[in-house]
Length: 126
Image 1 (spheres, one colour):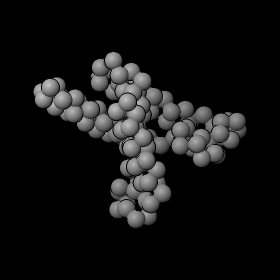
Image 2 (cartoon, one colour):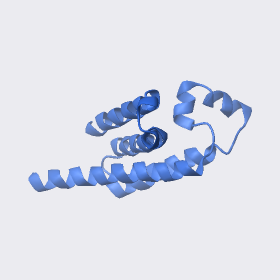
Image 3 (tube, helix red, strand yellow):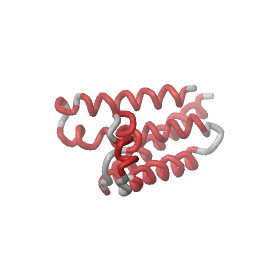
């Protein structure tokens, strides 16, 4: 249940970063949405596969993020119609950017690191 809460918080932060990007420093506004999206994916994977290792969640989340980005190379009319909706754009993106692969890698890696750090603290204290 805690991974669901974290995924929702990260999703909210990602939407806020897009909505209020004009108020953020340019590098934060430019990169934070994709980094947070990847973090949300990581925590969503952890929620679905809580019994699996953090390393496995890392691999699944990163593979998913990369697959979504690479799928943006496919620009058929039917999928672009889905991408033109708000939900479609949030899930599928709109166009391929190699820089997004770096942002996703950072988002998944930071989320993985936080997850490992928090889990290790819990194990040491309990």
